[in-house]
Length: 488
Image (tube, rainbow, N blue to C red; front, side, top):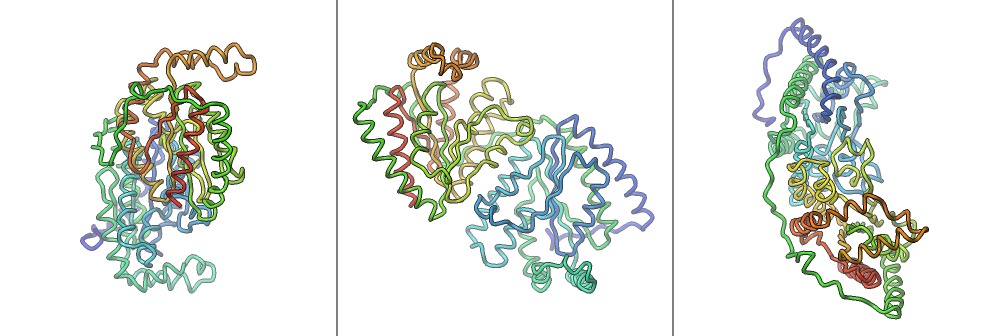
């Protein structure tokens, strides 16, 4: 793209100023529309060192109410971020509905820098590009406007600007070692940037090349594209998105009604197995930490199926400094205002740590589906989005284990009744539990479809037969131990 790009003729300074005044006023009027239509806008600024991204950004944001935008500089990856998945630090920055997020630098800078300096092999680089395209598509499919700008200057202009910055002690700090390296290897960088832009130039999230030789003209180009992009997005809101074909290898899954629930353990067998498994898991936890392997354990299941007791037996074997349990309830307003996976990205563990989710991202295709909290297009699309999310986790190196805790309808009724009649357990039973029970058949149909479409080879489902809680607890411990040993 960069090599073939032909810059348009720059208008006169007077014409540029008139254009700027008009566009600045137009952008200022968009804020109310964004808020009313709940449109989140993610603006990515990339380009050559010294191309003026920062100064243009400073001018652009003056036209926006500061309560409705944030700016993040993404050039330096912290040690904390290095212990998370590749896209973690970018996904957690996405804006709330009705607001802007401006990123100075992005995932492009991350992967191209690593690739240029030989820190990414060709195959891993290609995998990162696939992840990036999926990430951007997920955002736009879920109603985000993603605007990507590349500030372009030639080698001679870049060198001139770098030298000018270095000559002044007040601006010298703005020149990084990477800027110097970039200019010295301009042609090599140009080849990589050109190929990257081509590969990630998607219709729903295209690249816009900005002629950055003149700062006012650069600002006018960006504002023109941004204003038009917002107008187009507002006209096309609530548009249905095509459902992608599943390309993930799946394991065969029985229907819930086909799974026998008569498995049980005696009290003696349970105590003996529990002690043995917990000792083994405690030892493995130390090794996980030493080898920096993250573990994500996801629990879904019927109300009163025994998820909490199951989790308690697992965490009882772990060092409390190395795990966290996330009880997932209805999303908070700031979570609801973002992509539905955002609140799970923000809770991912560091390398060597364990995250346990009591209810998960699968709410999208169960409760949100059945209670009408999202559109049919949303939940149908979610199967593929969830598979992509879990693939990101396993490619990062995480062990992902998903448990469905299964009981039958009679056992659930007995446990509900016990909870209701036992004062110290009454907090566990709600009117919503009884309402959900009335929709058992609808939920079972949705769960069967969920298991069928997301039981991937890299992140499979395990059904825990929990009519006997003791049996389910030991089965979960044994599966966890086996998967950890396999990974180690």
